[in-house]
Each structure stands twice: as structure tokens, then as C-alpha cells.
Amino acid sequence: MKKRIIFSLVWLLVFSGAAVGQARPQENGLAGIWQGVLQLPGAELRIVFRINQNPDGTWQALLDSPDQGAKDIPTSKVVVENERLLIEVQVVAGAFAGKIKADFSEIAGQWQQAGLEIPLLLKKTDRVQSPNRPQEPKKPYAYLEEEVSYENPAAAIKLAGTLTLPPLKGPFPAVLLITGSGQQDRDETVMGHKPFWVLADYLTSRGIAVLRVDDRGVGGSGGDPALATSLDFSSDVLAGIAYLKSRREIDPGRIGLIGHSEGGLIAPLAAVKNAKDVAFIVLMAGPGIVGEDILLLQGKLINKANGASASDIARDNAQQKTMFRILKEEKDEAAIEARLRQAMKDAMAQIPAAEQKKLPPALQEASLKMIMSPWFRFFLTYDPRPTLGKVTCPLLAINGEKDLQVPAAENLKAIAEALQAGGNEKFMVKKLPGLNHLFQTAQSGSPSEYAGIEETIAPAALQLIGDWILESTAK
Image (cartoon, rainbow, N blue to C red; front, side, top):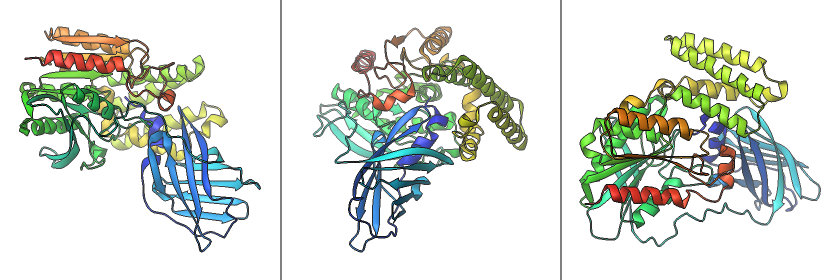
């Protein structure tokens, strides 16, 4: 799973809207590119403002978040008064207020968003270096690419995605890619990486058709994910399978699923519902144990990797358990909310004042809303093992050795045991040395490393997946 609470603030930066505000004229030393780094919980993000002065003396600016691949986000107000600068970005509910140094070399201030105030020092620069992502595909592609859309009649929504087809004569084996938790686009964009784009490019170049799809409520896909659970998302997968079967280029007997993280939970759900149409499954960091156990392990491992003390780790673990117990014990919504609020208040009282400032009321409210969501409550208590025990098709389960979000040892062991108990003898489980949750070659495996790693998916992981699919679908 992606760590939703840590990343909830980060994802706010990728939305877009409209801009331009009034300001008093200022000499053009302010015009140009200004870059700084936001130190967020578990991550660092570069922030870039490109500021220009209009002929009438007013100012305008655009916001970039290079490490997330977000560019040209409009601002809603730019005000310059003497040495003070205010930039508001309404579409992400954020703002920057700072003091301009006399020589226009830096602007020291605060970024405000979701109730947080984070120090941000902007420095003038000639250009912003884009993250180096050497694996991202370059046009012209050696295969065919098509924008597609289709209906999910069970949910009465339209889904949109990209289908890539080998340039050879079909029909081809095909895979549908299933993203991890949170609202993801078809490329599963995360921290400036596009893993599903890289994966689709690799597999299609080896003769496998690939369909990757925007999640509900993202990009070209409709629907509201707020009330949906993993079980609901499995119906989106079934709609994708039906679409692939309708294409003459696709061999209907060789359609499979690749699920990453939560997608590795959804894939077996879909396969059990429609076993005759799912020829194979690949689980990339897929859960094998109950969601609560994954979250408790995840919290301990990520805190440890980020340098937390043993006492802080134990405290956080106890607080998680308290909140999870409330969700499982209570049935009444009002009672759940009241008890969770009290638990959060008690938890805040146990941490130093400096740490409390990093968790303002707005962020606490966002966390509470997420914890009470249908998605979270389903995931918390869902045990994937009974479903895995009903999977009869060939299955490959892989995890990175340094995965701190869906830890490899515990989950791979559970997946293998469930498949064996169900009588499936056509599976392989493999732990890949040195790789993290995104299957990047990593140092600690912490999510804070994701953006700084140039590699999107380790070549060894790509080759293993490609080889296994071709072997499993060979005629």
C-alpha cells in the first residue's frame, strides 16, 4: 500500500486550476525561476515558482512540482509589496508568503497547506533540472498505442485508458494493469515516476498487449471513489477484461492481470469472480495477510528507516492499535467518530509540542476522514488468503526485499501457503534482492527515497515478469 497519511499532503500539489493576481510594480529582479525544497513527513519535494511581471505592473506566477511531474499549475493571486511576496494557489489550497532579499538572490518564507506551515527557502536559478527518468519510453514507439474507453455496467461508469499492441500479427496475450491504493492515473504516477508506463512499454515490446487504465474519478475515468472499496474496484477490472475480449487483436484465452500493491489484492478478487477469463495473475507487492497486520508492520518499518526511536515506534504502534480496535468494535458511525477523536486527542498529548505542530487540526481531520472511509475499513479487516485459496490459474508473486509497505517475508509466505492449501500447483513466489515497494534498487526502502532514485523499475523485475508471462501463455 502507499502510505496514504504521509502522502495525502503531497498529492494536493498535482491539481490544477486558474490564476493571476494584482500586485504593485517591482523591479524585474523578482522575475524569473525560484526553486526551494519542502521537507515533508517521509519525503522531500522541490517546489518551483516561475514569476513574471505584466506590462501593467501586475505579477503572475506558475507553480511546478518537478519531482511529481506536475507543471504549469496556475496561481490565484500574486502580491508584491516592498520586500514581501505572497503567492496563493487556490487549486491546491496552498500559499507561500516570504521576504525578498535585497539582492533578489533568495526569498525566505513559509508554505501553507492543509493547516501546515512548512519553512521554504526559494533561490533564484537559471533552470530547473527535471528528474532523470531514463526508463521512460521515447517516441516513436516500436508498437501501436491507442486511447480507449469502455463502460463498467455494474457501476454505471466509463473507464478510460491506453492500450498498447505489438506491431506483429495477433492475436496476442494481454495483461490489464491494476494500480495501488489512492486515486492513481493509468501510469500509476508516484513521486515523479510512471511505473505502469515503463512496464507497459517493456511488455509490449516483448509481444504482450497491455491495457492500463485511469482509476475511478481520475483522468478520463468517471465515478466517485469516495464510497468504493477494493471489492468495488474489482468490478472495474472485470469490465477491462470484457473490453480486451472484444478486441480481435487479443487472444481471449490468454488475458491476465498484473496488480501492484492494493492491485495485488484486487486481482485475485476479480479472478475468482471470473475464473474462466483470467489466464494468469502477477502480484507485485500484493498483500497476503490481513490489512491491519500490514499497516502495523508498515508503520514500524518506515518509522525505523526514518530514524525514529524505539519508544516512539512503540508509542505509534500502540496508538494505531487503539484506533483499529475502535473501528472493529463499534458499529454506530457517531460513536466511531467520537471515540476516534478522543483517541487522536490522547495521542497528541503524548508527543512533544514541536511534533504536534507537524500535525495541525486540518491534517488530523483529513486522517480521520480517511480512517473512517469505506475503503480503509474494508482493507483493515480483509484477509486475502481465502480468496487466494480459490485461485486456480498460474500466479507469480514478487516482492522487493526492502519493501517497507508490504513486507516481503510475511506476505510472500502467506500467499504461498494460501495457494498450496487451495491446491494450486502453478505458482511462483520470489523475493527480489535490494528492491523496494516500487521495485526500485534502494538503500533503505523508505518511501522518502522514491523520488530521488532514477530507476523506475529494476530491469531484473521487468525481465522476470516478462519471461514468466510468455512461458505461462506459450501455446
